[in-house]
Image (cartoon, rainbow, N blue to C red):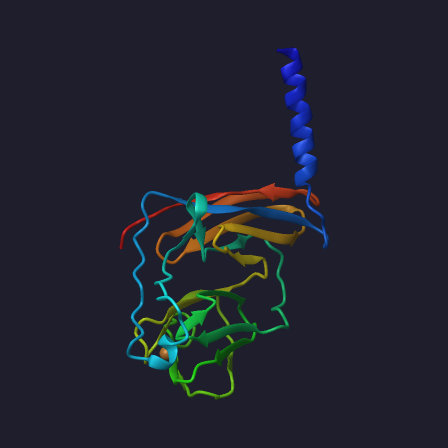
Length: 237
Ligand SMILES: [Cu+2]
């Protein structure tokens, strides 16, 4: 019994060492994974037959991206961000890029900062009319023919903005306009990492377009990595 205990402690110590992150910047990190419970709605394939120039770019049908899942109930396209406690930060100097390619929005969910330049590109051989349906920020829509220069704009206020195309009814996406640079959008494995956090107490929020939001508190004291997982409840809609 005693030997088992000692072995357990030794294994724990080893595991901690193996997981110790390499820090490239000062500050703490909040990292973890977003998963779901319940049964998510089944995503349907998109019929692009009405836009042959886009349809031919896809060897297999593109699936609706409202719910993106991965192995182990992983949830993708979830915005995880510091919603309270972060010191004020200037907007990033590099633009956030939102592309229209194959009649899809890439990325499906774009996280950017209020005041950060947003660059919207059209890489298709067809015209799009992008229509971000903002309520807090001014609403607009703009046509963008093939080969047109990028649309450049900014949003001044934090808001989750649904984006649609007035030409192609299947095109949907989101702008997550945040007042923090500490944000990540999960990939298909559900993982996220928020780095460079000075010591402090933070609220971390996870947002998914169908399953809503969930917040947790976390305290950073130095250069450690605080582990934080989110489990969102899958709902039909
Ligand atoms: Cu379009």
